[in-house]
Amino acid sequence: MSIRLRLTLLYSGILVCTLVIFSVVLYVLVARFSLQWQERALAEEAAQIVTQGEFRLTVIRTPQGKVAIPQTFVQTRDLSGQVISRSINLNGYELPLSSQGLTALTNGQATGWLEIVRTDNGRLLVYSRTVTANGQPVGILQVARPLADLDQALAMLRRYLTVGTVVSTITAFFVGWVLAGASLRPINRITQIAREIGQARDFSRRVDYDGPNDEIGALVTTLNEMLTELQAAYQQVEHALQAQRRFVADASHELRTPLTTLRGNVELLQREPPLPLEEQRAILADVAAEIERMIRLVRELLTLARADAGLRPRLEPVQLGSLVEDAVRQAQLLRPRPVARVRVERDVVVRADRDLLYQVLLILLDNALKYTPEDGMVEATVVVEQGRAGIAVRDTGIGIDPAIMPHIFERFFRGDSARSGEGTGLGLAIAKSLLEAMRGEIRVVSRPGEGSIFTVLLPVEPASAEGEAQAAPSLVSPA
Ligand code: ADP
Image (cartoon, helix red, strand yellow):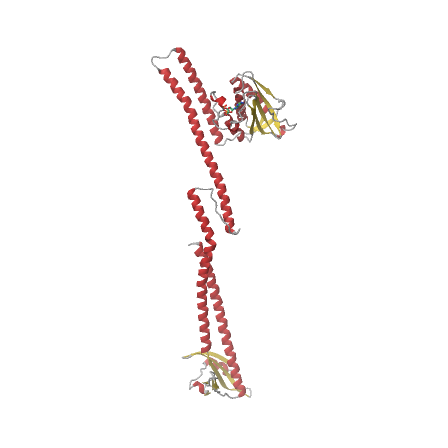
């Protein structure tokens, strides 16, 4: 059952109950007061007859000249209940008196006795009372009036109240139906729009509403806010999916290239007649280099996949001085080219995962050594900056073109100068992911032809934060 119908039935039900209660109470009160008024009038009439000692049946002439006989009937009985006399308008009929009434009156239990009797012409109100002489009861006087007029008036009242209740209920039902429909119309519209949005997955659409800021206004505002959130989440998921697809495509492309080279080389080695030994050795060296590259690529892909799946770094106090020294030594072993220096003016302890930070440092040092000519210089410095500390890796290498700067942290991005080299384009992306997992940050300043500074910053371990801050180096500052 719809809310509209339920509301309408509820209003109408409440109205019917109210009207029925009101009508019943009104009817009962009117009926009771009218009867009481008749009873009092009859008792007064009886008292008048007793004081005047006679009853005269006066014929009333109406303005139209018609003769009307009063509707009061009078009868007298002796104390045994025998009828003595009666007014002529009774036409020989007898006013009844129940044995209970007779007993009550003759025993002195009551001075007046009221009875309603049913006759062929309707109800009759009969009032009986004792007549006394010298303080002793001598007979019974009975006065009666027909209740036909009252009954007729009450029947009419009953009819009016019934018809009024039915008509008011039907009217209220239709008015309620229209009003409920009007107040629920915005909700129907919201439902319709929400359904359309769901079907078309068009989360950029909004529910337009220019009504007051009532419950429906609040519903529309909330719904629109929810749509904004949903749109943002949907876009985020869409971007993530796109990035994931791009990543998978790039990864398979990167893996296919060395595999194709390997297949070509193996085919060359399988050739009949075999290639000269000299060439075979050169091909095997190529194969070994290619396999090495693939191993590195797969390892880096794995690191990134782990970082994407939500890395849980083991954060602990890490002493930067020794870490930098170890990393520089290791980087130089792997790439024993330009001179790399370590400058640890003072040691600082940061909160980080030692292994992950070491991996980041190796990436930065390897890049610095890779992109710096033989006569250049690479330097790693411990830096401190307002509650954070870290390492700056500075080189006097080829620098980074401002045009590619926004992309260097993207996965598989390689600058022009790096394309022919052995880089995979994943190093900086990995460094950024690992640092984010440790609540750290990476910054870069670079000038083409002059060199670059990559600065890694992490939260300082509270005990080691004292002392004046030493700003992270910039290319122009005398580092
Ligand atoms: P790659 O394996 O190519 O080094 P990275 O993600 O480590 O991948 O770096 C992305 C790109 O950023 C590199 O291809 C290079 O163009 C640029 N780059 C990174 N570090 C340096 C640096 N120290 N000097 C100059 N260019 C750099």
